[in-house]
Length: 251
Length: 208
Image 1: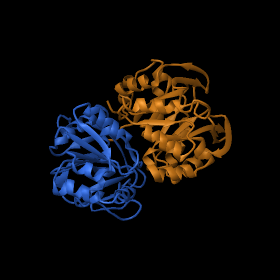
Image 2: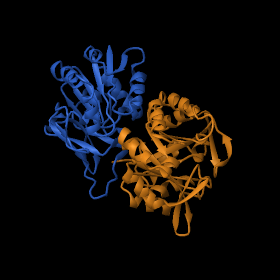
Image 3: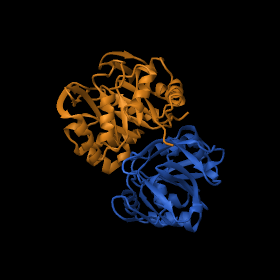
Image 4: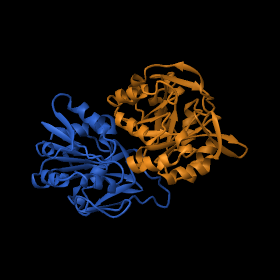
């Protein structure tokens, strides 16, 4: 039976791990290579790096981090943040990333998704959707949550599947950093709209939120950051908890 | 001993290289090349593959003499070869991804899209799934039945002769996840991404 995945996400800035509260107030929480190794040894099903300074200077630091991590971690590694072009994707894959997540570029130029999924295969193309609720729909935000595009998130999700995305990483901008739980309605709406796996993200504050993301949000995988890397919970605890709630996990 | 990972522009093979180097340490030379003479002189060959069946077969054919060299290595000389993911799928006679494409024909059978039962199962089949070992395979030495392996694929290999199947996994139906036919080995899952148990499979192959 296919297991639901738990994916710790490390926000990386200038080669160091940080986690934003609604993308501001950054706190340094250590070396990404070491942290990734701790997570993979602890049973993380995948590791995700989000390079949050990627669009600015020090862009190349992430390549070095990916190179070092991929020599030590033998579980899938997803890298996102500032990925603009097919060439950026190529470079990250060559450094040892297994999947690349594309956010702003997928919105501005969906051809990047079409081209890269043809060139490298859908299995390594993750489209990251940052969405915020407005009235009874959700709108896509880009540039790390700064720009509102007005694009409908549910329709966009379907479009990305058709463009060749292998997975969707769906983040609720309303919930990110708040620790009040995933936006379940958003997750389940997107999950029922597409036939590719959905990774739920944004808002995890306790282990029950992970359960909700899978059971109620129908996510194939749950991504979380701060509950893991400030030592609040270990991956093992999270998996045992999910297991106790009847969710299939790799233990 | 020399183990060659065939580099034929089949997509991202960094993880395959990293994992084989991690396991090989200094005991074994890991080469990454499409040089025909280097492949011929290798003791073992790894055939990775990402992307579509068609794109991988096209990429193999784009390197003059590569298919003949692989045939000689695996079929005539019967030296150990491990296919991973689409690398395994290409053992088939024919694949149906994108368009009907001829495979290497080493293990008679076809590669078709996984039946997702009208959307009941998401595709690609991505993540950790348990393998059901159905026959003794040298690459499964000290691997427990029901071990978890990492999968990413939408197509499955359906061999005609079921006796080549060494493992299956349950996703929509019983999917072939590993084969062994004499010197030819293949895994649909990614041992290079399957943590310690995956590295053990790589070790088993290197130690054949």
